Image 1 (cartoon, rainbow, N blue to C red):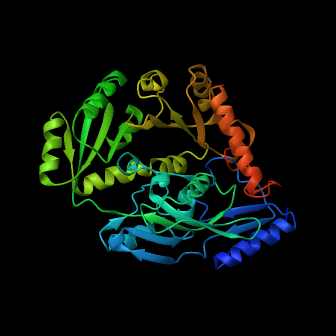
Image 2 (spheres, rainbow, N blue to C red):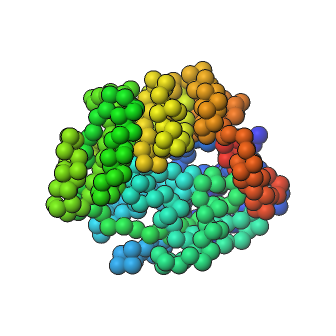
Length: 388
């Protein structure tokens, strides 16, 4: 299939390209910096590729109001560097941070360990502008943190993988960078012990910005063992002293060693996929109480956002992933093939959810929304985990 690649230099031009392509009934792929080609559904061949790489401007920045508006093609790392000059940050720490565009981070709804303390893109986006296949530019939300008008429309675009419209700019709530942080490492020989550590953290008055579990196979890559729970704290000297009192059995990590630890946890997925081109990453969503049952027999590396019950399991191939998915399905534990080679994402089911009216109703609603935005199925076909 012959295709043209277009990198519009303005939102208006991008909207015109979408309108013209849709009028000619041409299939369209949206792209940023292609950092997530192994994520979600397959990136199928399209007749037109529209890239946001030329949309990289800061549109408005109000440090005192803790808000910023940027175009979708701005590299995420460049945005963080800009905010750092004011002692601020976008409180997201997604994988592929060095390569990803801010639009790609939002469209894929990726996040990292800091989601515990700050939430995901759905919590930090206060407005956006997007282009529809009709050639319209739609503004939703605003530049005020408490302004909720139109946010539901923006939330439809977050995590949609470009299947509904093209995000051209995003307004964020920003946060001040913590003055100091410290990480406490707790260890347990078995998952049952991890559950007890989690209960200890939940019962204490401390409020960490991140709590991640490293399985023994994952911890080994950090020269740690066996199960390791990493608790990242931020605050004053008095606050960090309280953490020491609440977690007296933990080893404390600070400075460059701490930064390196969390950078490697954040980038564990890209590093794994580079080492294992045929590797598969599963995202498993278990209840906090059901974590041990869901993950107890998994010998391969996994990292869990412990207070949320979301685990990322790293498997060398589809052959290794398939039996784990079968077992999770038997346990009625939702799982998703988050990253995999193109052949896997093209030929196998990627969403593994328990049977039930609630799940089916949710999927039926997604299809209705897709029909509203893209009735002919032209935009980023199959990118929403092969289903939309």
